[in-house]
Length: 340
Image (cartoon, helix red, strand yellow):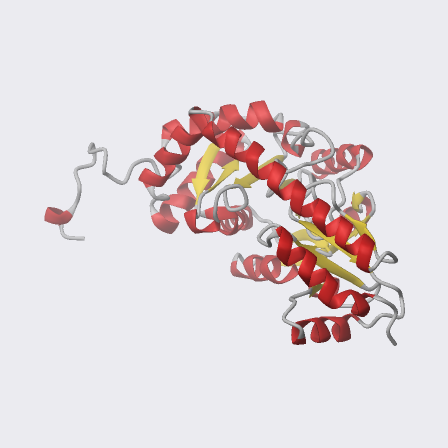
């Protein structure tokens, strides 16, 4: 840019710290300590343009330090994780998830030096990482000097009890915790954060600077003020009640129209998993539902091998009205029974 067009470096409208607005970083660090039981401070928080950039920056930095393989949950965000890892020059390997969360024994056998997890509410199965698995993960990371990347994408929206504490608080020197306002406010804001171990903070800040010089400063200041004023907490309480109501409508609608369908993953977040009869063909159900203007997503999309078995549907209710949920389930109730 021509020198005459640049804003003075000491101006409030200058580029600022590429790691993020200091006020927001202090506010977020305090918020994460209070709400997520995190062990962090402002100088370890880096503001990013959403979760996608956070993961990309971390993998690029870790690749520069010698990482060659990263594990990810299976089922999970297969396509985005493999694409981001490839961009960073790293191989992404799937690691099995069961009813207790990621299989730590399988993770260790994979040879991965890092793993990307959603421990508070696993995407997309909805399971919570069991306490014994948390301890095993922390032990694995300490013994192998590995890194755990914690995607804390919707942990604040829990309905059965207080939110599960962040894994980062258990092993702050080994866990990089990621957060975002995409679920709590809106994806269009493109604001997220990294709570980094001290040894990686400077490298991540430099990677952010090289990538885009920093996220939009005015948006950061607005978020800081929203949190500091208490309005963010009030907004979360209001939306938590609304999402819980939509969840309850989904449960009642399925109980009334398809009582044989079991639902899991309902304790938090914005989706549930519907377990269909074994003889049901996932693709047939999805196609038939689409012909009735009802969008469904099969679990096979999120499995590394794209297997349609066991037959499960991922039912989202976060951006669907209560009336639309009731109507949609009524329209497809006959499809949820056994079909060969």
